[in-house]
Length: 373
Image (cartoon, rainbow, N blue to C red):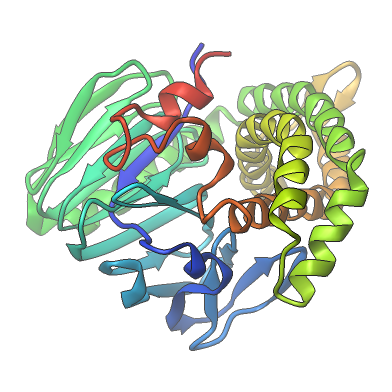
């Protein structure tokens, strides 16, 4: 089965130097949001800078808007809705740049007025790719595993993992269900907001009535993927001498010699390839379980998840593991960021694919990298 992904093409970054600094900033903030970067987490505030591979998380009432900096070649605004977790992934490509938002849970909206050159911007979540050229749209990743894309202006080309394509535009929304159904839904533009609310409410009610099987399914996936994630993380740490050297160099905003850097990148590449593929799946299952934990805490989904372990015990174990797991995820993103910094701003995977997308040979990095399980 193909690994699930979502791409919403919107923006890009034209220069490698931008990777070392901000790609955006918090232009509006309501209630609480946090920023995690390079293994550290702090409360976001108005004007906080947002860098490549930063994780942004809002609480149940939080709302954060990220204004994309003009240096990125994008005139746009990304709105992080309440109870949402996402991070940025930026790469410089030939003739333009590729920037992604990885939507791990919740909902995000964006308004894109202009894109410079051949750049694009990606938001990925579960099972759909959306390409945009000047538009206002919203994407909601329900805890049930369903995905909804609505558009109030312009068009969003939605492509699922099987290559099927649908267009979200004023009057037509696109849905991808947890069961794999990919379809267009008619909706009046004047009803978009209420339609999204009602859609999400219906998915939540359906999830509550089916919480037990959902928890068992994701608990099984978590256990299976965690074994591979732990192994891949150990492989990465086996090159600790290189990682520590990169950390020291980053602290003084420098890098090693060209010869050193080429040797170090080559030594790290196998471990990074292995762990990035594992992380892509594992982090999505992990954040879905965090959502399911909230519903379980409300009394839904009681029962056993397997091998004599009930849901109460499973979520207690998850709670004790969560801080360490999130630290590991942040460490991996930090290393990927440092790799790109030593690779002229090109991420490891875009580099292997020869640029990909609109700025490269036209081949999707999702098609090539995530492939099939």
